[in-house]
Amino acid sequence: MARHVPEVGNYMSAEFTGPERTGPPRNKSSAGRADDGSPTLGDTQFFTVAEVAKVMRVSKMTVYRLVHSGELPAVRVGRSFRVRAEAVHAYLETAYFDAG
Image (cartoon, rainbow, N blue to C red; front, side, top):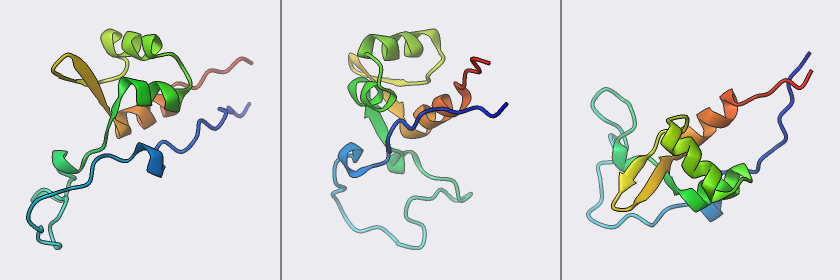
């Protein structure tokens, strides 16, 4: 039986974009890429817990539980957490439930 997950919205939409970059222009040929071609940390988009909760349509407490249990990887910045956009996408892709 095919699995169906309701659309949760486009978490990469303009309303979730981060701050604009400032500073000197970068070399366009290698901008955003490490020497091996992988994206650099500076080009990774991070969400706050509130933004993750909005994307997933759950409470902030649910997001905190996922972070503390290790199901949703996050980094701690001061007293708050930041979650990579890729981690949110990966969690949603693997969180299918077959009510079958």
